[in-house]
Image 1 (tube, rainbow, N blue to C red):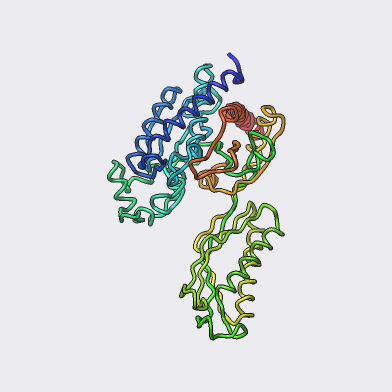
Image 2: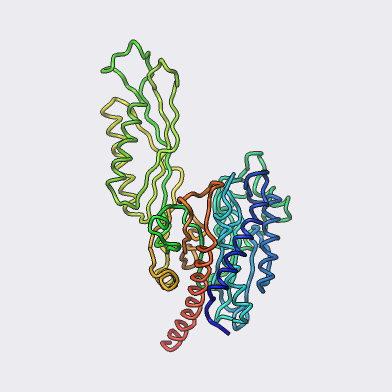
Length: 430
């Protein structure tokens, strides 16, 4: 019995994970594109296929009350707490193959290797293919991972999709019941840790020439609807000195946002993603402009400071120009810091595999955000070409995935062993 995956075994595991990503990508509601949304026929087909692979790896498999596909590989003793692995199986529209599914399929490969080697760890391993991380269908995110934490708001079941079908109705159509959602909740002692593998969705690893990186924190985010309101007027008759041009004010603010964010912490980002201008005629001074603001960062304090600075400047620009400024936050999520001990376990494994470990934040959201409300989390990133994600050109290499599976497995074994030694020390101190 060997205690580490060989290079050849890792290569075979990487090839298998990549081929399975291809197979899942064929399960789509749109021909020629990858779109797989929550509680669709494609969702259930993906669950079924993933469940088959879990069974082949030696796991007991079930689908829970919110539609997550779950597998369990027992530890040395029955009913032991588990290390939770996984990611999501849903997608955005016209997606890439690897965002989400790669994390589920590499997790299955680690269990498959343990099963082949007839190794049982001191703790169990569970893998979940989460049902809905992206929020593509109903506009609410993390439904699968929120399901196991017991943090589903009651209002979610009444949320409609674009065709007016509510979550509750969609659940009923696939054999699930909104009344039983709470049964998906897992006890706090069910898991000791959550370890998620995911593509980076950014360019940092590629620029560093590294296959793997370790996440320090998942960015917090604030999203706001903002507006400047001035006075529409004739483009030919209102002198420049008399204008209350809402678009000019918005443009000044956008330049300020870009400059100040660039000068701040390099891990902070700010984006104006939408802009509407009224009346919207070529010969009329814009009287009303609405725009969005999305800011993100790995620490809540600097993020709040940046937001306060940006909003203060918006007010000042409006006052100076004789306009009014409004900003309403409609979405906010706190930064999620990865557990230091779990992060170190990943870092040690990555250093052994590729010679060094790069620490970096995640600018995108992940299921780990929801899981961190109840259990410690850590994340391993895999390099993706050009940092491209949420796009058909999303790409990873078999070689990088093979390295990732090796590092993933080593971290899992280390966390399992550390959990037992930690329990022993605690028992001695009682």
